[in-house]
Amino acid sequence: MQEQADLYTNQYVLSGVICKTPKFNQSPAGIPHCIFVLEHKSTQIEADLNRNSYVRIQVVASGHKFQSQTQHLYVGQAIQVSGFLNRHENRNGLSQLVLHAQHIERIN
Image (spheres, rainbow, N blue to C red):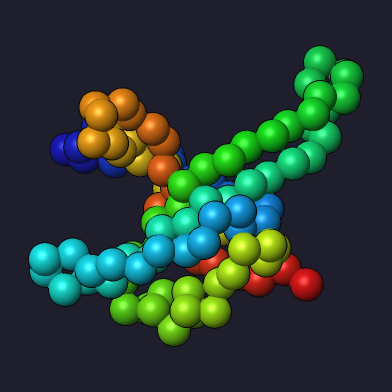
């Protein structure tokens, strides 16, 4: 029997501009991480009306496959990130949603 959690979908795609300088660190297991904040502004249709959408979300790109790609990210750069959302708890115990990147594409 398939695990119930495997039946749910967690896919998210967001384009925007990097608004905080990327930070680089490494886990105790030696996995490289790049952490930055992506800002998105757009107009969406909701109930047949225009609605301004504004999102700022932390993005984590983990693993060696992102190492060379993330070295060249900078504030003001337009990118599209696809991945999954996960809950993180900060040092103050407050939870936030974080986008874990599976693919990063530069937008010209």
